[in-house]
Amino acid sequence: MILQLSFYLFSTVLVASAMMVVTVRNPVKAALFLVLAFFSAACIWMTLEAEFLSIVLILVYVGAVMVLFLFVVMMLDIDIARMREGFAKYLPVGIIVALGLIIELVVVLSGKAFQLASMPRPVGHDADYSNTKELGRLLYTDYVFPFEIAGLILLVAIIAAISLTLRRRNTKYQTPGNQVKVVKSDRLKIIKMKGQPGAES
Amino acid sequence: MDTLLSIWMWFPELLRVFVVNLALIVAIVVPLMICVAYFTFAERKVIGYMQVRIGPNRVGPRGWLQPIADAVKLMFKEIIIPTESNPYLFRMAPVLVLGPSLAAWAVVPFTDSWVLANIDASLLYVLALTSLGVYGVIIAGWASNSKYAFLGAMRSAAQIVAYEIAMGFALVGVLMAAGSLNLHDIVTAQSGGIHQWYFIPLFPLFIVYFISGVAETNRAPFDVAEGESEIVAGFHVEYSGMAFAVFFLAEYANMILIAALTVLMFLGGWQAPFDVAPFTWIPAFLWFGIKTSAVAFFFLWFRATFPRYRYDQIMRLGWKVFIPVTLVWIAVIGVFRFFTPFGHWFQ
Image (cartoon, rainbow over the protein chains, first blue to last red):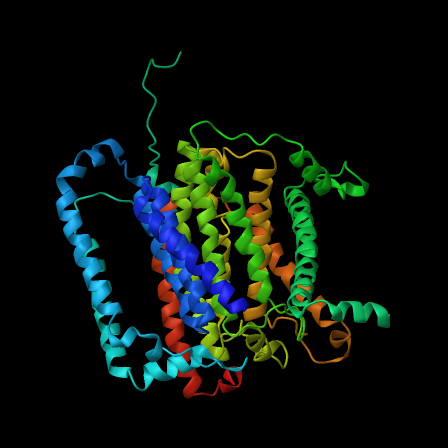
């Protein structure tokens, strides 16, 4: 009973916040609603005993990706009035894309794989069942090659992103180590001079 | 007594579970809040003595009632909501900061048997919740509709994302050593005395984790998000009264949480350092408290000692020093686990 109630609660919040993401005007609020949508999706996964995936969803998407997303969205100065100008112009394209999406969803969801009969309720496990361990076992035995390939692609992407920032720029910068190591004799030269005759009286 | 028990059993099971858990939550949160209040007092006293002052000593005997006086004062102040701000988000932000830092205590094992929820992936749960706290800061900065608050929020967001990666990698080292994501199992894996605690084999990760924890809680020397010398008080400039007090409480609750997690993962949790007589007389939860206070003291010590980092220095330390250190040490642990004269740490 509790499980059903929590499922309906989280899925209502999920659907409502997903609706708000696309309808709300303010982009920052839209991003915050997206955070809420991710969070409720994670809660639904939790009720499926997929605690590892659900916490990782929170950790990666809510904790890191959306923070960076908000970071960018907050910096943008979006003029809502100007965005609404093009509404009529883009409407036909938008309708076509939306229709395409709806048709695809209907085709996929009405297929055999999504019938209730082919999706039985997953069997419950004991309290000492470790979701994480099972997932690790599966990833490193049955799916080890796809997993390694995905890892390699991500590694290449990271290296590519870093090498993009490594362009030699013509900027001057300080090396803090040298700044810290500086001593008096590097900056200050004391010269002994003879006093000029007549300068002092 | 029997009649009371029968009345109790007469309630539906759902209600009983609810009531018991609520009582347990109160039993954790109320002492925690008292600790937070006296931690603020301890901070003022400790920093006072470090700077050759006395610190607060007027309210109550030796100033002991100072935190209560502060709380009462803040409660009676008006909460000003700036015009042109976003009132809902503005009110929500302090709650979003405090909530995760309290919720994380649900999985903290105080002793071998005292834990509210002994869930399997509690380490991940803690990491996920500590990463949520940043939303409160970002929302507070944005909803205030103020330049300084906004700058503070931006700084805090970049800083927390940078240090969270280092923190996460440090925890990867811990879970490799313990072979479990459960905080209780991590502590029991360190049993046997001080030489078994993970701060010895995982020393670089211990340092990285604790310093990242200081950065994550926006404490000195990483408190650029507040940076009163350049951006007034950062994300909470516009907050007053109790709303400000909630931010303040959250900061101290987070510090205690980071200290407790450091103790659990690197300093043997509730276990005594030596398994001989005078040490085993002290009960387990007291050991946990003593160790947590000792680690929490470092937060105050740092604040009294170090000047604030510059923003680019913070970023360099996070991305270019801590993350490589943790990556190297994870590889080292992987080697140690299998080719080993050091195997006794990683059973």
